[in-house]
Image (tube, rainbow, N blue to C red; front, top):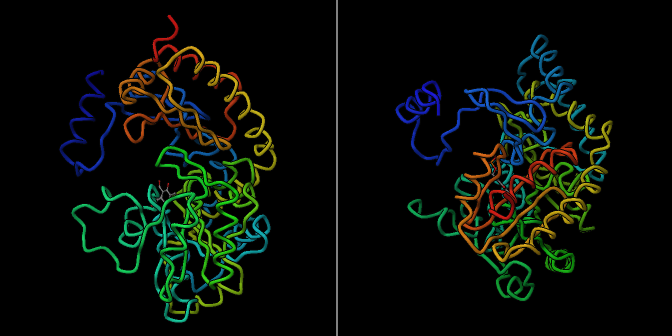
Length: 394
Ligand SMILES: Cc1ncc(COP(=O)(O)O)c(C=O)c1O
């Protein structure tokens, strides 16, 4: 680390709350799948912004849309309409079976709103069943739904009315349903847990249960949308439509924006005064979101994800043949996990030292959420570095 980077990290330790475990890296700029540190060193970013930079860093079309909008209108209160908010809502809705949109600012806020809508539309019932291993964010309802005690520790009592079932185990869900239950909330692919996918049969089973018992099926699609699974929305990949779904992360090309969506028959319960967000649907975020949707289409990125996903399978399965260090490999679209038999953090640190940024979750899982426009050559470089960092290649 240079003196400059060292200085910035020290200032960070002094002025920021110490809640994040940070790599000793100061990132100064990004372009596509690449970022540069304060010393000018270049890195391939295979976990860009924790999945936020779905189009890579600073996509020119998104940056131009932000610059244009910044000269026009930064923010407008939600008791007026803006062109860019309605255009973004239309682009999303027409790709999501005509659902209506509520705009907020983050994934956790989207989870909060989705849970509020489920309760509001359920005649006084309030129980929400979610899943062990799930991650829904850091606000109170979100940590209550999150199926990992570590995220709730120190914050109890959490919100009443939440129960957790086994993921991919329908009987365990049925056992928890009672006459207070109003919703089942599920990630179609548990991301933070290490890319654990629901089976289509499980999601179909949840759909059937919800239909039979008049419950709202909520999909948390904060990580799986837009595009990440090779379809606009994750539910389209699985062929099971939820009643309410959330999204955030890459939905607005890198700007902080979250949404929840529902058909009008459910959305109608969100009457004036029931819910709101001052910043939600702000003009800059919506202009960036419009540009992002158009880029995904124009650059054919759904197809890129489908095509290059297969290349990742070939390369990583070949690595698996070479070493017992890899315990499991899981991929859905561009959600990728390489589970190790050894600690993952030192391997992720070696990858960073060798110029590739990846994430390590749950101690042993190396995780990638690559930009949708990552090229075959970039993956080739990234996986070569991973191979070296696993000490399989000189
Ligand atoms: C599935 C899922 N839901 C919700 C969240 C929370 O999103 P945010 O950090 O934007 O509040 C995350 C964040 O990683 C997530 O992966």
